[in-house]
Length: 106
Image (cartoon, rainbow, N blue to C red; front, side, top):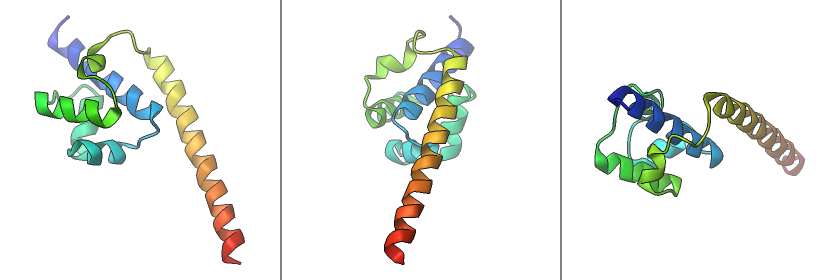
């Protein structure tokens, strides 16, 4: 394993755990005390965070830090499917909340 592959695995797993917990990048960045841009670069494998940031990300995601480095979590195809399902879920929740809001506002 080389450094590029390690960054790719780390980024893929952070995104996977983030999506599973239905966190936006903004949610996770805030919880881990980093910028959204930095998180986005980590998830794409462009940046590698320091140890303290890895611990903050793991704590925010509710996992052990070592779990962020496992190469067995999910394939890119599985992550894409999770992304689509998560986006659809969020869209439907927002529509339902808007309907409830309109009902109680009237």
